Image 1 (cartoon, rainbow, N blue to C red):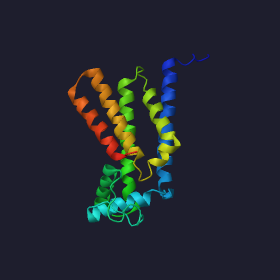
Image 2 (image 1 turned 90 degrees about the vertical axis):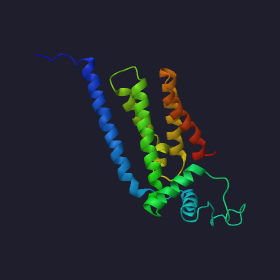
Image 3 (image 1 turned 135 degrees about the vertical axis):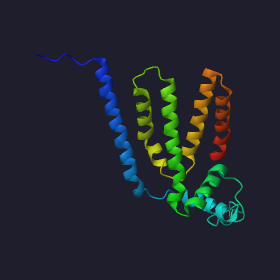
Image 4 (image 1 turned 45 degrees about the vertical axis):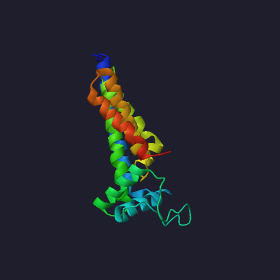
Length: 195
């Protein structure tokens, strides 16, 4: 006897399992790639600013001595990003990986907020939308790379997307709490990355 053709529910379940496997493989590849990441050109500069804020209380740089008095004080910097980096230096010590923890956490938050947003706004109940969205985000080469760097882009993306998510929820539900959360994330996003 010939088995009946698979139903659409069976096909969706198979695609869901395939996407789950793909997400697990990407997560494993990400973890494997962590030790081999080279130092990006901006990490020493941002790292020095974070180090000086942690130990001296002021953002200044010996790397740029003679340029706009940066050896005394850097006025134009990614303020919140540098201060959060200083916090990681205080907690975890002075190392490139203690600084990169900030971007790894921000990348995790970005994937979580994307997952939450797609799950709450998706019209299909199959669970494919959030899996595809997270997979596309993680397979974007720059996102994959910047999650491993002490640079502000991933933290700003997480703040910006969190703002969008909660403001969208406010428009759908009219809950003031969602408006406040969205507004807070919108407000701190430019403090993370000024340009």
